[in-house]
Length: 319
Image (tube, rainbow, N blue to C red):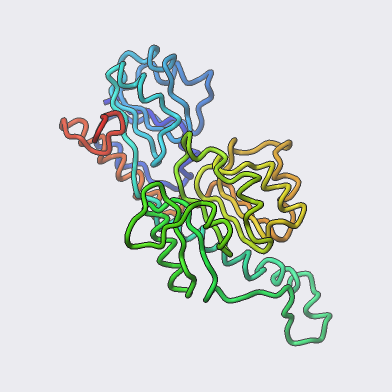
């Protein structure tokens, strides 16, 4: 099999790719622009990609292509209908990053709620030494015990975050499309009104695009912490930035954006230096353990395909 990895840079330089070698000849590109894509895909039997977009034009120009392996859980960058019509199988990697995203979600919440960066800066800029006082207890922070932690999206990641929240003594509220018996499920309106902390873990679709907008933000407590670990477009970025600037939202954290990386004209550039805003570069999924697990699953997906087995196929309806 001729296997082409199109954007290794999005996987991290230290992510081991050796497991792919057992299934064929592997060609690795750090990045692939749209202009380079048609040529690089033209002779490939397997494409391995993370962010590269695959559409009808690419599929038309790739007569040998049999399999597209997405190194992520989401697959909105591949036109599944066109792939199916071209007879090209598509696989994803479900569940590989649950622990990693949970870790960064909780770290973001804890940093914002404890004002950790401000306390650290107070020490590192010399203010603590000059003060002559043994401690500093402002800005004020509170324990999580007794707070309400709202979780939008209750898949593997949402459930893992809920377990951590409960371990800290927080009460968990859940908003999901189909309520479940093992969680306190509420409407989005109720969740926004009641929660002290809100973390987003839902997929992006026609129902969740700009799910958190001006109306939802208006329902939130002025002290509420909002963290987006879902997809960038799940929030209305302009409205979030305005809420932060006006003091109508306590704090905001995000690891995902509508365009990655976002440009200089993005609304978050106006708030990203504020002490109550914590933005990270789409890194939540990327603990080394998670990335290693991801590639091992991609290799297993290729092996299953070669053996005529169905594994993590997103092009098969009803799988």
